[in-house]
Image (cartoon, rainbow over all chains, first blue to last red; front, side, top):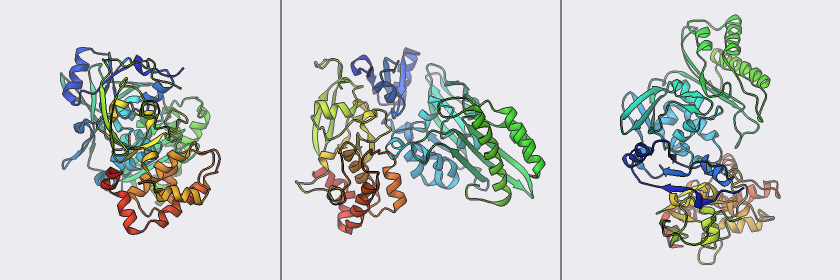
Length: 292
Length: 182
């Protein structure tokens, strides 16, 4: 069944305030749509449930990327091409720029938005491991005001998150303190272009002498939603990376993750790849490497 | 296939204005109607093709405000006020775009379904990067699928078109003024 355009309403009130008023007046009725790279696919296939949609496309405030000395604030409707073209993102948050380049095609990247990627909540979301590694913060807005949560608290289950019905994801904030960290990101998919991740791992690390002083690990497709790997981080913190520490970190990883079985891969395969990626990350940490 | 549902005009539908290939157009259609269907059904610009209908194949690629988009994923209301270029707008006063010329010479087109999308993806690349490297051409075409050529002829056409652009043409193809003049 194809979608029938006459069965759905779409409005474009043109400002954040107007969108928030609409969400507050009829909570749960309006579905925000930005670049449409998820919702329009559902529409074309005739499986879009939302009867009323409100467009976020073209609201400049939601697409701005602004920096202070301590933070970069990325509007939720900034596209992945916006991220790839932004000097501060490519220089200070290279993992995010690289993840943006993995998302679909150029045509997808010019429409798909960072906020949309998070709200859609795919366990395989390309931007998530980088955002988790950079300790991102999520800013949400409603007529009641704004609030923030750490990104690792944002997803609460498969395709579920902490947004209230009248709330809009407003911005993704990154602390500007990773300039001297080591950065690691690797995605394993079926092919280089247009493929969805079977497993992805992102990390930022700071070493002191030979010990791990600071480490943040984010993973995609290793749980029903993107997750920080806190147990693995604990297994590494303060340690010098030896074979034994590697084995402990890998055990912690296997205990911590709950990979899914789906059409793209099996749970068993994902576990093995995750263990190998952790090994690669630690190897590159010790010996240097292209993606570390 | 018609995704318009009821084809009769409905007063509740908004009037949507945009520019297509330099010409100002207005349509009154359901705001969720796909830009692809508006181009093909309402404006009879059937050069833009539907392949997968889910943003994977690139057959429906057009340029909107200087960016490449899959028109099957754009609800037409989001094109309100936009400047749109379709494959019909590539040639200038009857003269083929260098890319179209190169596709002819190098066998870049076979059955033709993917060709308009390939040309638009190529035009987008050359507008931003007049002298692309092989990696840039590969990335620019990664979202466009072809089931006939095995891609090499398309790749060669793209390279030839890029090599053939002299500095003035390259500059010209990148400028908004020329696009507006079409």
